[in-house]
Length: 208
Image (cartoon, rainbow, N blue to C red; front, side):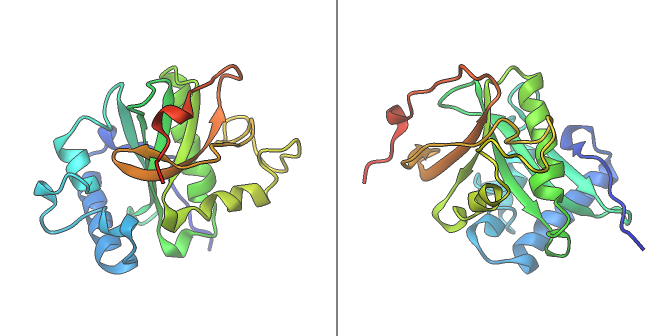
């Protein structure tokens, strides 16, 4: 039997019970799914005092609320979280929306919930909030993710399966050197929602 999923739901619109499911999901990721840095930063027992964790950001800051940003989740038919991702207006340019904390449960990673479905919501948020570009920031340990999109022909004239509401529909633009965002060395790949969008990436270039 085919598993069914909800459309992406904004964290700000969830019921109390749904938010409890989100907290269970973040804890499970941190403890059981993986031990890489992305998983560690979802939750920890001292999350109320750890500003790097997603729990802290969701509960104690306004980074992912209102006009600043949002966090989206897709639930499976059992009511558990299948995948999630956030989006916020970057500190270096409020016209640039950054997708953040993208995570898909291992058992659903072949269903395009993350790369397609959840990022549609991220892209739509950027469009609705007047961003001129929307992209991903990649650390050293997950830089390989962008190659997945490239294999699909994104960033060139041939776009085999993308629709107009999917991230990277207009192609991929990569910054060809690392930058510093939130005191961290990262790489950026993004879609121009406005073809005229430009930013001086050298102004936040990471020094070797």
